[in-house]
Image 1 (cartoon, rainbow, N blue to C red):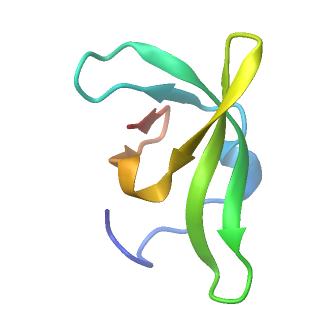
Image 2 (image 1 turned 90 degrees about the vertical axis):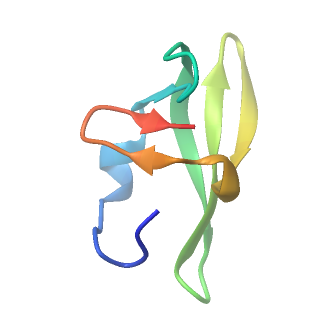
Image 3 (image 1 turned 45 degrees about the vertical axis):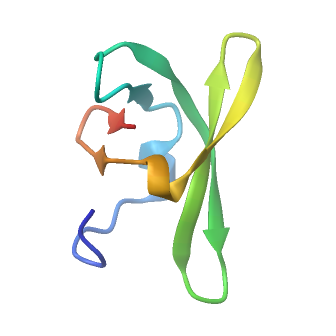
Length: 71
């Protein structure tokens, strides 16, 4: 991922679909973000999966697109 080049507002990411880079299947939707408030860095996402949630660490995120997050 490119560091510091593109800034996306948090509200634009919440609700965005999370897709598998390998299969293209929908894994869930972004529910919340884990942000290091001191350094301003994204640490990961909370993803809604069915009726529950799962953590998606930053190192498992491949890219952020206009329409989806690829993991």
